[in-house]
Amino acid sequence: MLQRLYDWTLSLAAHRRAVPALALVSFTESSFFPIPPDVMLIPMVLAARARAFLIAAVCTISSVLGGIAGYAIGFFLYETIGRPLLNFYGYADRFADFQAQYNEWGLLIVFAAGLTPLPYKVFTIASGVTGLGLLPFIAGSLISRGLRFYAVAFLLWRFGPPIRTFVEDNLKIVATVFVITLFAGFVVLRYAF
Image 1 (cartoon, one colour):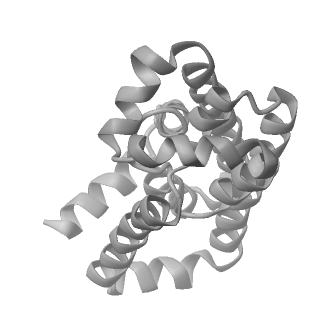
Image 2 (cartoon, rainbow, N blue to C red):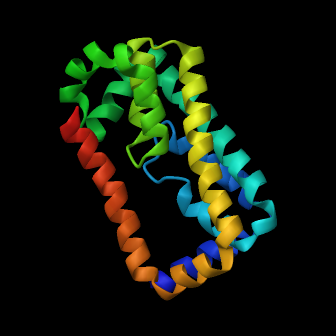
């Protein structure tokens, strides 16, 4: 089953509409969608290494635009959309304490969330709710998301065939580590703040 899903994802990654699909996933992940764009970014770069940096650019720009949408949710729609999203992800109770300290460390927090498996969408909404400056938010997001997606693209571009072979030979382990890392990001966020 996992192998079929991987093969399907690789075939989708090579599809002519893969780049717009990646842009959509990257945009929505930054504001409300729980699945990170890496699930498309990685197979797309493996399928078309010559386009690695274009793919990273699309992923970065779409992610930052989605982050701005998350910021807008927090800034304009916190009570109607933002609070229910934080409740859904289980962060509403701790949010009041978090909000009090957020602007002091906001730029650094956004930067860290953009680079790590922490759920970036929570921080985009938090930035809007707390009124973190929009320009510093965008700058921190561009730098951190760009570093993350370009680093992945570069490594896959540079070492593509061995990495692809490793992923295909160890698909269950790679998928398990990915899911654990994603889950760990939510757990760390829940208990750290």
